[in-house]
Image (cartoon, rainbow, N blue to C red; front, side, top):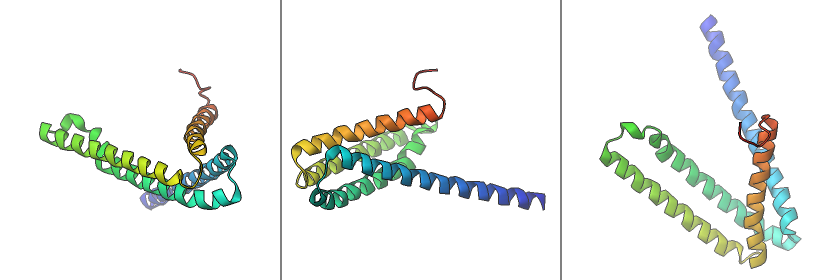
Length: 150
């Protein structure tokens, strides 16, 4: 009986953790949309064309990174136990993912620059970096890190 209760509590806490994680991701996404819309000063017409292209890119990039994490990053942690041949194969896979990500980025920049001006495209790149920095700063602040080394 006690084991069942512990199992139920464990499943419940994991479920809550996933729900909180999804809520957090959704909140961050909403903040990012507002941040980019404001920074880029998108007109209604631009926004209507911009967001489908941007969201498609984000979805493809997220899927690629998830695939990389499951197929490569998890194995890199265990690199000391790999044979040289396995390590070489893993390195080849890693380079392939890097190339795929670079191609995705190039394709996105070509596509998005058809929707918004070159100047706004550059502003998008800068704004994404600024958003990441603000997110990290906020995370450190919330965790009590103060942003500096400990």
